[in-house]
Length: 178
Image 1 (cartoon, rainbow, N blue to C red):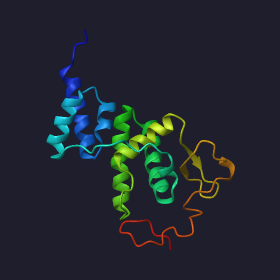
Image 2 (cartoon, rainbow, N blue to C red; image 1 turned 180 degrees about the horizontal axis):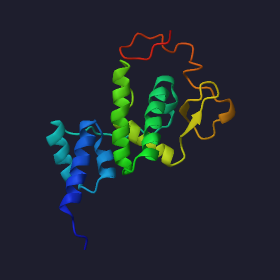
Image 3 (cartoon, rainbow, N blue to C red; image 1 turned 120 degrees about the vertical axis):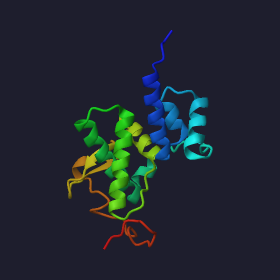
Image 4 (cartoon, helix red, strand yellow; image 1 turned 60 degrees about the vertical axis):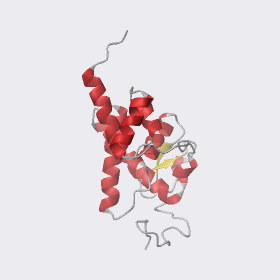
């Protein structure tokens, strides 16, 4: 029989509350805490004032490969990788902190955050499972999210070689190319 620590449980609740405030889906909370589904559901409703979204989590790596999402995912993942090397934190705490820093950067640039915390968490899982990786751009030397089989020597990122219509839209908060 395992003895439940009140401090451990308090830390789990605090972590779940942080994730809820960031907009995490219930499946992320279930995966990253030891709290029961019922407790998480009650906590979610109490913190957010509404029931959690239903449905499957995004599972395709393709979303991360399109132009603007790739730039946002790359920004987040570079922050995450830096924190992973520089700070001694639990994996989910690294995701939370990296996501908060990603949000700060997008706000400072007047951009809308395209990456939800759930997608950011999923991105880290994809990288951990070898489904995605960071590849260095041969022009700017920045590191961008790619499939692991990308030919790294000749890779050119979406900022150095944007698609023809990239940045032409007038959507509020989108990246504009001049």
